[in-house]
Image 1 (tube, rainbow, N blue to C red):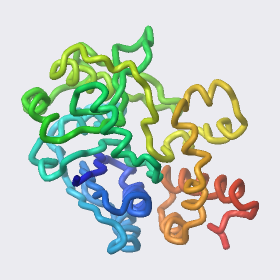
Image 2: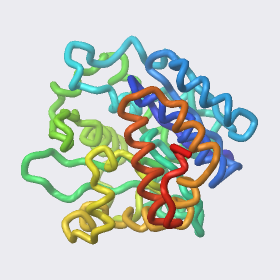
Image 3: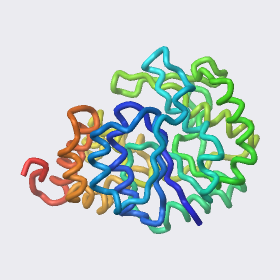
Length: 299
């Protein structure tokens, strides 16, 4: 089975791409990383990709879906365009895991593929995901970590997303829109409610109540708000927030990545900014906890 790990990237997140593809290559060398990039690849990411080229199996398409989506407000980030990916971009894959780019995927047993195929079989649908708990301020949502069996999924979903894409939707004007503060003073717009809308339109009232680990690795986003420190301090509220995904932060591979020479070199190469801050915090925190020595970033 040909499996793709798929992500849609915009703005400064592009500097995560080399870390994303390298971690996948270490954890599942048989999987392909497929990156759809809204802009062009920055030179900083190109330099770091040169370090992993030949080690990782990846494709990058630049300027992808660049002509659709909201542009009148920087807060309205185009995360949601991942759900509008046309069939032709994935049709050579048997399965795809659509996820965030700020992820260090970790190998598991059973594998990510086997876990998600079991969910597909249990629910009787060509995707594996679940619905978020009810929140009085938001519409229904499905998580943003979405596994699909490509051909069967697009038979149902393809006409719906083609219509949405052709209409160049404004996510904030949809019936199921929502907006929330992400804890960093930034607004996020309803990619998860859009996915919920698409799934319900295509598959109806399938039971998506069963929860399971969604990240299949360390999602680096929470490091921006230093939530990883609260996780390691065993704060019940944070452990509940991370849910099944908390276990990935204690994985031996999470510590191995922090001591990996290529990851350390790529971190040194990063320009100052959000990605360098996050990756530096990750390496320093995991190196100290994993080996008892100071970060090799500055050695």
